[in-house]
Length: 399
Image (cartoon, rainbow, N blue to C red; front, side, top):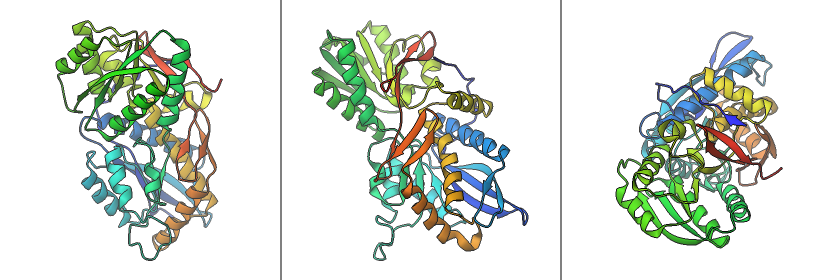
């Protein structure tokens, strides 16, 4: 199935959020979900897409009657957004500001370096009177570095396991391309997600018998890659694995074309299975293989992609996670009988944390999503490759 292009958007914004409440009437209240994440900078596009996804999901929930609060009142969801600029200190400041309000849950952030620091200021173990950390539940939609939720029992994530995705991918590549022997890695060394995922890629390549011929490094803000690609060209690897986001992925691929570097196979970072890569370097990215937890291959996923597009974004594995989170929050609010009133804030925060921690499975756009004891998600995934200007499904590991 082809993942259709979505028109580019002009507004920047990053996604994550908190719920706060303002009275509307005795029969209906407004439940505000505010995103926090990278609304500016190189990775701002992820926030644009996540904000659109949250608004799309809120619209769907409201059309269906909204959310039923603990006293039987109907709540209608609204979405707004805060910018942490992909900066850890600002992320902590933003969440402290949110936690000083009537909010009882936050969704975010975009960047793994922010999540790692932010989760560190939360109370490590819920109910520990000796721990003065922030007692406030946060669920991440984008930050993808492995294992972050274990930092605090108030932290949750709805992101796929990149370890499982690349473990599966490299084992499959070995069966499909048995003649390939060597691999060269490229990584954004200053970005936590890229660095962590390259470690996974390298380990899984080696586990499947590939010889790692070397690694090229660059920064997220770099615009020239001639030295790195010369290193790659000298090694002449069978496979090039690039653990980088769309902007620098495209820069490297264009430089590879300029220098005539033509590996037999290209592997990319999950976050680059996006419309931004196709818009930036669709020709050069042709054939690149990437595992992802989203493609419009189910009726639910197709509908979500259409609704996100109407809100000015595009659906990818990150924004799809944000879309799913909105429905997760709705279900927990209703199951835990959360009141969403100014005088029940701490009780509601405790109920939300307990409700999220108790989840064993949630509904996902590609199918059921499992929940682990350390508050991570086990999401269905597949492999896509860039072909004819779009992302096409190459293989479904579970099928």
